[in-house]
Length: 592
Ligand code: GTP
View 1 (cartoon, rainbow, N blue to C red):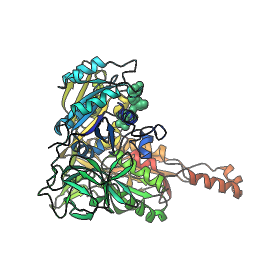
View 2: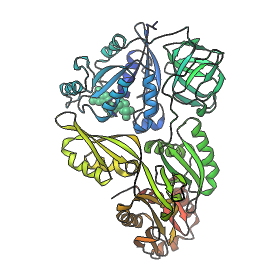
View 3: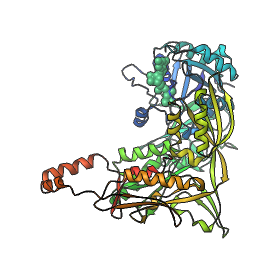
View 4: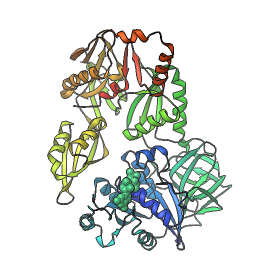
């Protein structure tokens, strides 16, 4: 049986091709929100997201159109959140595939098409931004044809000017299949997202696949093996709207006093505790952090505050991990695990904004697998814990396969960049006569440095990057240590390939010389591999400042200065007798 009046769909697009804008137009057209409530891009409702203009968390909304209920499931647009994307797609029967009429098919568009096909979704191609002077829908259609998509099925829209929106809505009800609805089966509901609210706790967003769920039901989460009583079920309207029950085929939320997101992870299956399904829905995966860095409060007294803040963030961010660590240089802090660099930046910003913390963060690192001569096997996520060189038998590092899409003019520059970053060429494919996708196998360690920035600057912003994990490989890696004022600063250690170690040591020492402010005494900076010093520079002593002395006694002025300093986060850490700014910890990422 099918639930004939329901359509579940998502919108997939390359970043900036207009997903949020089109979603807004659809909400307007279906009267889901009035003009007065209309905040730009309502689906991205986290402040940070709006400022950054990217969709981080999946969101859902139920729309009424003609006699149909359309459930729009928004998907995160960043590679860090690929697993959430896959679960959102699993909750749908169809997808609007948006392509910018001027930019054409991009790496992310292709990745999205493959994902949508994998989930057996009906794809409706939408060529957006046809109002742009540079729009070239015919070229986009040709690109679609090359990808095996019928160009005649493409709709033309301008989300900005509201053109073609009705056609999109009609296509959704005509082309996307109604969901299967096995009402008499035990409950199976897919958790494809969740939000956290300090009153209700974790509120999972669910797609009911079979059976029904209503208030008072006892539910069971099959992966986390927890049971809860349902307090409320409802739909997104776009706010919460309580309904009597959610039946197979429908999308909505439930509240059940779940206090910790780790008990209700994305991808889990909710069933009925008393009448359980025999097996869960396929595809559950516990997301694992890929990138680790140390977070330290600049003021050691803030350690507890940081701990509490991380605990709170973790309640609604199942991918964030942390454990306490001590650094000789930085004192007490936490080793935090993230899905990727964007995730790391988001967590950092939230800690600073929402909890008013002033933090120093060490350069991100991947997990290295080290086998010692003694036979002991280690997983190292903090470079300062890397064993001594003479104890090491082998080291392996995670590799990724990159998908870089770029205009053909830049092929030479990009291939050189990949090769400079230890990339191994896999293949290259033309998307059309002037755009190509290049695949390289590369160490993930090189991707989390400033590779992306270099890629952008060597292609004047035209290249896009995507990657997927492909496992571990042995490499000849060494630990590069930095000594400031003759003291090793553990938080500045990095793992680098032996062949590049000397060059990187030299450039890092030079950079630190620029970044670390002058002190009243000379500060030598050294880079070393084991006992072998590979580079040395001196930061000269500061000359006596006569003016400073004159003002020394003026208390009110001093206070003003202090207050000013308080306002601008100082992100500076006292290491021995030297003040090291945040930038120094990130300088190890710059590889030129
Ligand atoms: P992410 O959330 O980053 O994935 O981006 P998105 O795909 O949601 O794109 P968004 O809707 O934020 O649009 C990106 C930019 O394109 C914005 O500046 C929009 O105003 C603009 N834009 C969207 N649709 C159109 C359109 O039809 N025509 C024109 N000219 N601009 C558009």
